Image 1 (tube, rainbow over the protein chains, first blue to last red):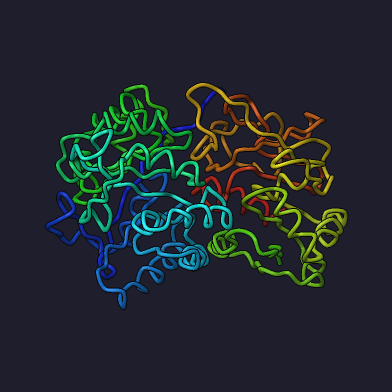
Image 2: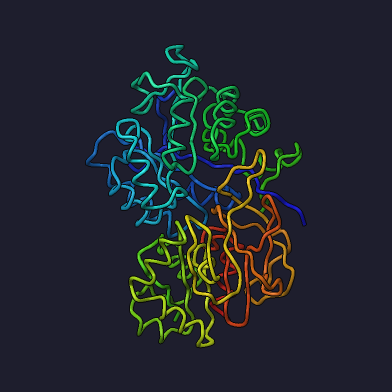
Length: 258
Length: 201
């Protein structure tokens, strides 16, 4: 039996004050349900991993995400990543202690790239996902400029250079969200995904823009992504993970079937 | 009672939760007496082999683990815990393991278009019957995260194989000693079946 590593389908749950929300181009949030309920549903449908991104604005409500991670860990036996508001090695430690398998770091890594090295040395690269949110602005060498703080702040940093750097610092994976494509449902940003995926020696998770099953196929074939992240296609019951996997399999992409 | 050896590395909570969800008693412990008294022992592990082995030794738990493995009670190594069953690892220099299974731990060879570490779901095939894998169909998928793999000297110890740049040993079974390179606690129903099989040995 010759089966190689399968491509992963990863539902993403944006969490605001303990609820799942979904926006368009990082704005205009809409309620999409209870996180633990959705997590269990996606697990049952055959999701390969889960990502929870805390977009809670106020730090006093931030502790809700730790409680959430702990509840998820009790019910869901597939890997899950938690991101949003991770600022130091101790946040990583605390998140891992609640049962998260990986943490996703974004703005804090841009502010202090050494955090990636420190966290990966202490917890292993497999635990550290660096989230990169590029937007095509033309202000950097490749044209893709990294934005921080949930896409609100342009950094002047080139997305490809940053991707290469985070891989060198010990990131285990890159979660690449195209700000231009996010929520548009017109497909992943294939040139961006492919450019990053071919550049770095670590897995790249394509994110932002999934609207049809074919978009997922394109992300792994043309985009060379190792995994695809998606939200709205699933959250409103348009598709199940199982349906998407059937489509990928029919199109020659190896996936894990239940 | 199952003892899950706590030597300060990795996420023990998910392994603990998985057994609890199956209704099996498990205790996360670094107490040598508790480990010695347990019916079954699990050696977990993540991160680098050398660091894991050093920490195990520094906490005085290397001999405790060896004694448990030699006592004849079911003993399971998970991920780096499986790698520690072997003689040596080449991860960041040469490091000695527990030497319970003859063989080496080596890095996946570089291969065009293949990203290392292997992160994700891959299939198992079973070259021999093992009580650990009871009830699983060939092709059952489990979750892996690793850059190094175990290369046993004696092929008869191999309980499961997986394809990633090469065909490698993803689980071992020798008498009372078992090891899995993947994370059964993160491998959905298939993983829970394996943990349940272990708990029922």
